[in-house]
Image (cartoon, rainbow, N blue to C red; front, side):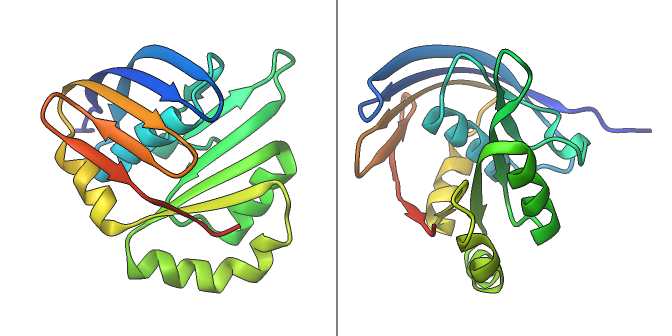
Length: 178
C-alpha cells in the first residue's frame, strides 16, 4: 500500500525589505512520505526568499523532471529553478540549461560541505547558478517549528532572514557559495 503525502496548511507573511515585497501567501504544502520536516521547511524558506505570485511548489520528490519550486514566465519558460539538497552535477547542468536562474539550497552539515568542495569548480563557472548553505543548527530549528497548520512570518533584509511563528523567532543564516 502506497503512503500518502502529509498536508501542511500554511499562511506565510513575507516582508522582504531588499525587494520591497510585502505579501501574504496561503498554500498547502504536500510533504512526500520520504521527505523530512526539515526539507519541507527549507522549501517554505526558499519560497519566502523568492516569493512571487508566479512562484510555485512542484511535485518535488515525486518526479525527477521538476525542481522543488519554480517560476515560469507567461510563455512557459522557466525563469527560476529552486532545488533542495545535494543534486548531482548532471541535474545542475540540466537545470542551468533550461532555466534562466538556478538556486540550490544545500544542508546537512559536513555532508553539504563535502558536496560543495566536490562540485565547486564545476558550478562556480556558471553565472546563472547560486548556492546557499543552511547550517544544520538553522535547518533543525526550522524543523522544530513545523506543524500541520502554520502561520509564519518571514522578514528579510540585506543581512538577515527571520522566521517566526507565535512562539519562536529564528534568525536563519545563509552562506552564499557562488
